[in-house]
Amino acid sequence: MKPRHILQSTVAIAVVSFGMTSPVLAASPAEIRASALEYFEVIPSMVPAVKDNAVTREKVELGKMLFFDPRLSSSALISCNTCHNLGMGGDDNLETSIGHGWQKGPRNAPTVLNAVFNEAQFWDGRAEDLKAQAKGPVQAGVEMASTPERVVEVLKSMDDYVKHFTVAFPGESDPVTFDNMARAIEAFEATLITPASRFDQFLEGNDAVMNESEMAGLELFIDTGCASCHNGVNVGGTGYYPFGVVEQPGSDILPPDDKGRFAVTQTATDDYVFRAGPLRNIELTAPYFHSGKVWNLEQAVAIMGSSQLGTELDDAQIKAITAFLITLTGEAPRVEYPILPVSSPTTPKPAAMVAN
Image (cartoon, rainbow, N blue to C red):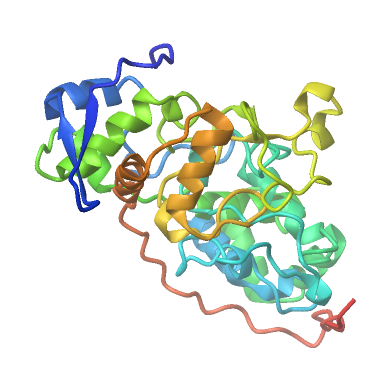
């Protein structure tokens, strides 16, 4: 990818007297595409390779079962899909997720769709890959509240799971492990990609798939500097930046007790620093930001303009950028809900799910 830079703006927004707006493009679709290709990549139609974890059919099928199985939680009520609902954009559409004992989590659940393209997982990047991420919520007391030992006991109590693990991890003397649970879930999550968005089709050469308002929004997204942080195949998900480069949002948006990446690195310069959010399918994943405090996409665009860029975007610019962001919605993966193995008499009983 070429060095990030702020291009000279080529977009004008014409405002008529009764308040309606229309974009005026000074560049051709081909010129806009050339600029965009300096920053963005098309989501591939094929499942990407995963480091140190071959994405086999058997592993994906096992990972899908585990992703939907609530018995990985101590209450047997919460699965990965609870907070990363594949029918709702890959998240739960809540301000912050509700976990074990009806506890409210500290941050908004990121979408699992296209997460395989992220540089690291979680808002603070504390998990280097999807394998590491899969282990976190299972053990977190505020989420699934289980332990590696309990998970293995649950899985080994069902012969069907033992058979699936044996096939998915051939040659291993003891394939039913907590690590292999995470590897199977990672393999399944690697298949959760959303190609063929209108934006991808535009990058591939289709001039008619985006209208002038959307192309104006794309130009503004580049020219104002949004693409300096939100770039690459996932239009974000790489790099760490302070929330409030120019001006920090108020406590109603940025909770003062959430120090961001500082909690991972213990480095003062990482105070209030977060991974740049991936923007693919952003219209499906409200509410926005790590706090989940903003439910309107246009409002989120306006906040990012003032906080990150020091720019007060006008209504026409906000609407154009929002129109562009909606073109990032791709083809959702079709996932058939799996039939899960039946619990046996030795399967650990659910822990009480009581309010804390």
